[in-house]
Image 1 (tube, rainbow, N blue to C red):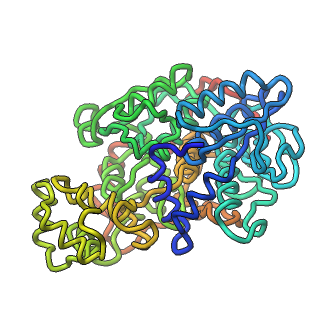
Image 2: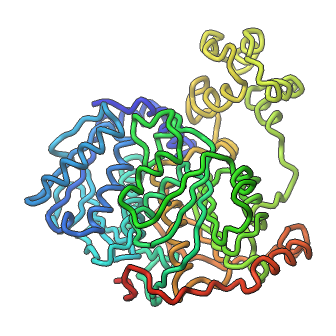
Image 3: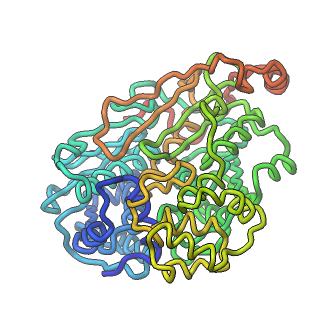
Length: 519
């Protein structure tokens, strides 16, 4: 059995999630001695929702676990073969087995593993159980299946690495990706086709989750995807669309591959958001933010789309916020990211992490110029950290940010967990955390096209390290202190001129998918 060659990034994510209880050697030992499995049967294969759950489950499991067992029932052999091929594309060194003690079951099979987690869906609703097989719906909506895969993989992760199972299990879970709350979808979900483009900013980990879902939707229209970066090897730990051969590929081109058979027309933009609006203008009516920093989120809101949604992962939770209008009483995206106190600059954070706080001016210079690190600086850091100078030798000539991200936060210099939970700006989530945030982001957009669209700002937060409580999306109002752009008269006037009627008016032509209530 073989861990993926980007395993260290997954270990970094686990260290941040598990905190002080994380022990890297024990974590690796558990991975290597615990095969995990996926069972599918004819019922799963005959259901579009079942196939979607299986697909995302494999995309999540194969990034972390070195051994996967596939248990196909009669009539599911061909789909199992495809999933095995997918697992090998994600981690070419993965070991494929025929049995495992712990696994996820999709379909009607009862107890295919001695310790079984069951996943199912009914359109918008994700279903997970530790007791019995879960039904599979016929609507073909991808959001319930996507969330089901993420919740099932979160339960499997907790089963292996978090103490006190079964107290930490979601014994019987239904979650509505439409209403953003625990429970089954109750609102009507009639949908109309809207002749408007949507723009997704960010094709990283969260963006991959959103793209996976949107590619499977039956929505017809144009999706612009904006990202200026390429895939790095470490990204593959959580990019659910990525395969091992995508190292170095342009992110938006990887996204294009997922839409080859989609009813959505994807237009990739290998550019920053600033370059995108410079070329395309500021007229995008709907904006999806799948970003990892506050300044870019605020910039997205400042472009004044008519409707905007934002998704995130951070230490402690993941979530999604939906903002139907900039000028109503609800908070805008920028409201959520106003600083409450003075924040340390990057040079201060890095100098303190390296235990050389007196060298802030030198660290600032290195960050500004990009000059490579010299042996003298690294020797001092090694002395302060109590590490052998040879351990830092690999960073000679490299950027100081590499030393901070890889050495301190990534475990190359200090053991993972020893440095504590890092600043949220360098948070590395687990794959199922990012994927769920992306699926919820895509679902929020799809709901905005319905006659049950939200009319006020709502914010949902979920912690996947614990059983899901009675969570639901809660209202969030403006700050009220005059500091945000949504309380600025000029910005509000510009929004009103841009969108004279902020409420979206559905087109009269029906959308292609069903208008029946989910479930």
